Amino acid sequence: MKMLFLLLLCASSSPVPKEIHVLNIYYTASSKAKNNTEFELVLDIDGNVLGSCDHEILKTNYDWGKKMLNDYREVHEFYTVQCFQILPRFFDYKISSVRKDTSQPEGVHIFQRIDRCNFDEDTGEVDSSMRFGYDGEDFLELDLDKLSWVALSPQAAQTKRTWETEIVELHFYKELLTYKCPLWLKISLDYGKSVLRRTDLPSVSLLQKTPSSPIRCHATGFYPYRAHLFWRKDGQETHEDVEHGDILPNDDGSFQMMTDLNVSSINIEDWRRFDCVFHLSSAADKVIIKLDKSVIKTNYDAGTSIILIKIYTAEEAVIIIIDFYFISSNVRNQSEMTFC
Image (cartoon, rainbow, N blue to C red; front, side):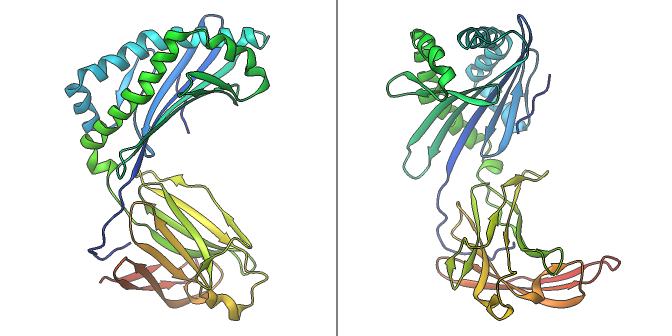
């Protein structure tokens, strides 16, 4: 069974803020019949899927991940035992327990768990959590301080009481979240620094489908995924007539996002008061593109224009001039970029 979860920049002497890194371990189990539960575990750091396992296969997606498991045999052994022996029985028991507590019949039920730990490189602080879901709804969350469960839905009340009698399991979760998870995250950041510690700024474009459509500010190719894309009016962030999209993954491991501005009620003379700003949490730089009709890429007009993309650092502002030639769909786009 496979259950899948789902600029260009001139060098600057400005200091780069450090990251808050996140390790997520996603578990999904499905009860197809009595005593026949299938599951998959997926391990993710900062949006990068490092590996996965089920009751038969344990795999990693990066060479540095394989080296890490070879060097840290205790980590390899932990996941081997968990995936091949412990978790199949664990999910059988948990689904049966929840079904009994909620008086539900046998059949197909989906059980999910997310273990998460955050590591702040600036402060050294670690924040961890564990949450269970059942049939697509939030179910229980672990209170690490009290070592008790918080019911996230009324039907979880009985299961909360049942699970709080399992003292050994609660202490195992505490060790997993407060010790093992942060340790594995720090080790992974060391072995996978070329991937996990990189910073990629995006290309940013303004797009419009039709003259009456909202103007979309689209940023693609950035990493890591913690980023902010927003519209400004007179230098201040604005939410009026703005709609934000989700951050989505690209095939190359980078990310993309967009935000739309409805300009139907904005006078063309006032467009100069607006710009779109991209800010990556791990970088001091911002990418800013002014709202100008001449820089919008469309399918309904032809023209040649200059796009001024400003990249602001803590100490200096640099302007990159991009000469775009775009015309209707039957003519190939060309572009020429001048780098600072």
